[in-house]
Structure formats: structure tokens, C-alpha cells
Image 1 (cartoon, helix red, strand yellow):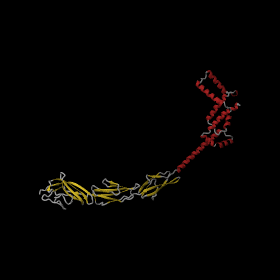
Image 2: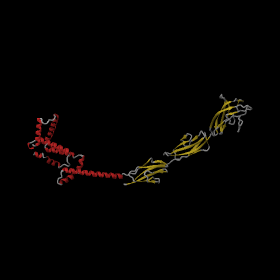
Image 3: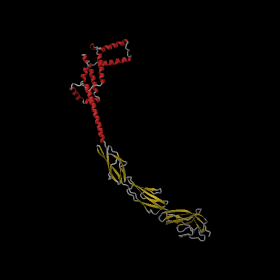
Length: 436
């Protein structure tokens, strides 16, 4: 009976014929180890063989000292391990030990790799049993060959799919610096397509192109649909974007009496610009303005360029320049002599007439019509020696009916011109007594 129990080959054949795959080598080793130990400790005269005889001889040699003993620690550790394994195995019959190890194999079969084999096991194993009961290990090897072949097929299929995907990945796309601008709007396009062989552009403004990265000009304001069609091995692909062109404003202005502009005289500017939201003026003399219809005064004669820049709500701009504006010397001039010689023979009333060549009367000369006028003379002490509100009456050099001594005197005049412009001027004059 013991021989039958220890007939490991028959037992294993019976147990593993029902298994779906072969156990790993580690499981075989564990089973062999457990069975050997169980068989050893169940010693009987029927199973006595050279194994037991060798063990007895080795034990005797150790006792008489011919073979070195292990250290006490190693010996104790081995004894504990052997006793523990003996107690565990000796409690079960040999069939139970094999059954336990068989279950261990079954648990191993649940791993991810062998699940692939398990999914196709039934038809393959049944077919092998019908054909002279093909051994289990041959079935497993055949199954592994099938898996390798399937993996190779899958790899070839994947590579084919990648090639097809690559061909089908053609894409039409383009970009530019901005899709919105002001008329005339020049656009440089950049082709971002994938997999194209030829390209066809339709800019929506009546122009087309077959270039890779073309450019075009949108002359008028509006919205334009730009299309790019590419041809590839997998077919034609189209992309489109909308271009917005905003209307440009128109800058225009007029300077009133631009042919007779004088320094110190206010000029008026009329703005005729269209579609503008803001204005920026540059008068050429360092002065600027943001008013729509500004007024300006040039303080020096010269030649100036007047520029206007207008902006629309969308940010588009236009500019216009009035070149070579001639500004003449101020017409509001007050001219006065620096010296005069009063008449010592007779005191005149100071009324002067044009032309006056006598140089007996001191008075200012105006280049523009005066409406209000006040003229005064001061000596060195600040005393007013003459005063008049009549533009035709000047100073005759007398003060209290006597000619004042030769000296330098201060004069001033203040008033308004006929156009309302106010003036104020001052200077000095030398009174020279005549010898006659």
C-alpha cells in the first residue's frame, strides 16, 4: 500500500491531467521536498533502501568525529525546521500533501499571463485528449507557441494601423500674425498643414495661390473667408478662417487764411476728417493739441508743417500734413524812435501828421488799427512828465511849458486793437535839446 502511495509519477499524472497548464518549477520543487520528507519520516522495513543506509552511515561518522559537526546554532536551526515540517506533513496522508500542492498550482494559474492561456484552454485540451491523450507539457508548449504567433500577428497589425493612421493624419491648417487689420490690410500666411502634397489658397478677395506660404492684400474693409485645400495620399482636406478688415478713417483739415498768417496772430483750423474717434495735432513749433478744431498762435515768423493724425474706434489711423505754412512777422507791431529833438523856439501842441520828418514830437507807430490807447512818459525819478489818450498826439519834450533837459526817459503804451486784441509795449527814448 505504501508503494502505491509513494508512486509519485502515477499520483501526479492522475492529479495534473485535470489541470489546464503546467505548474512552475518552484511548485515542483516544493512538492518534491515535501514528499521526500514525508516519505523519510514514515520509515518502514518495506521501504528501506540505500538512502536510509547512507543516512545511518553518515550519522555514525559524525558521532565518531570523522565528519565535522555543524555549529550548535546551525544544528538547532535545522532540527527546528525538520521537526516543524515533519509535524506539518506527518499529520496528513500523502494524497493530501499532493492535493495541497495541486491547489497551489491552481492558484498560480490565476496570474495575468496564464489567464491568456486559460481563455482558450478547453478546445485545445479536449482536442489533444481525443488524439491519443497528448501529454500536458506538450500542450503547454504548443499554447505558448500560439501566444507568440498571436503576438507577432498583433504587432504586425499594429504597425499596419500606425502606417494607415500616419497616412490619414493629413491636416489642413494655417495661421498669420493677425486675422484683423485696417484697410489696406496686407497678410502673410503661414502654412501649418500636415501631410499635404499640393496646396490651393482662396483668399476670398478674388485672388488665389498655390504657394506654400503666400501673402495677399485686402484693399477694402469687410470680412473675408480664407480657405486652404491640401491634397494628400488619403484625400483632400480643407481649413478656413475669417479675416476682418476695418475701415480706415480719412484725415483732412483746412487752415483759414493760410496765405496771410502772422506771428502773434491766432489761426483757426477746421477739421473735415471722417470716421475718426480721436485727433492728434502737431503744429511744427513744439506745440500739440487733441482738440477736434483747434486754434493756434505762432510767436515767431517762420515756415512750419502742420500734421493731423486721426484714429478710429477699431484702432485704424490716417494722417495728413499741411506743408510749408508761412508765418509772417507780427502785424501787431509798435515802433518808436530811440531819440528826438524838441523845438526850442516854440512849444507845439504835440499833434503829428503823416509823414512827419521834423523829429520834434515823440510818439509810437502802430502797424494795426488801434481802438483804445494810453501813452505815458516817465523821468528817471518815475515822475509822469507826459500822458495822452489820443493816438495822434505825442510828447513835444515840454513839461510845465519848459523843455526838459537832455536825458533818457521811459515810455509805455497800452490799449486794444480794433479786432479786440490787447497790446502793451514800453521802451526808452533820449531827449536831445536842439542848439537852434
